[in-house]
Image (tube, one colour):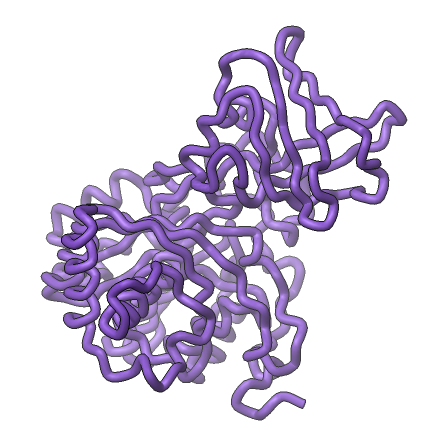
Length: 400
């Protein structure tokens, strides 16, 4: 039985099917925006966001780019096998390098109809008369698939031509033409995500420019959103949840901007928040062991030995590590699990959409605003907000 403090049941709410946004609105900034400020709630539109963000704030945007990760292969018998790219293995484990592979590559995948795919069967997918991609099952237990093709095309070109947008399963529909553009932020740069950082979907180039003119500083970090973000919590004690691992890229300017911030640091989305908070805990680990790798484990924030380090000390430890290695960029991984009781070290505000009941993301929101998460979600339901990836959004400023 779960302890009361870690009971998943406390984070359930009723989400009617009709409140799930199945399609994006006509314009990105047409969405509603719920402003939560020091306990008070106001209902705004996203077009008003420039007036709502403090002029000395520092926004962090996640510039990951969604790849067309769903590939459909046909067996000679007619059976369809879906291969969903999740993690590159060969010739590189880094997304950017793996997507430049030519002739062949190996990825860890989620595979639909796996039972109908015999080990010896090589599947084929014809892109056109001249280009054909083949898929062979390398390791059934690990779901490793080797892709091969003739010609000079990079794997990214193959994926863009043959792949389908990895829409969230709860949309329960096939992709449409609009999804290719709208399930991507206007500031996406680095391919590697299989889900969009959805709080960023509301921003337009015009709004970003207006925020800049107001004096709101903006910076970019990268967290490649994994399919694990949709994995439901199955244990009544949510602390037992097997948290997913995601890849992070940060640079020296990010850290310098955190140290120089004169106003609240506001991540755009839970993925940007997870990146910033993971960065802090990596710095903390460096203060204990300067040789530690950039990997933030699920329970690092709750370890007694890692407490008591200031944000400045943490960031300085990372800068020292970069100086030691002669690097201006760091690549790492995180499986940080943020739930009620977490002490936020970097983020003082948060843009975020409305999430699935009893999910890791609702737990994160509850950690950020306390029990007021229930009031926020009830207000959104009572005022016809649209929920989940293509839904409306919120700006949470717990301390005003």
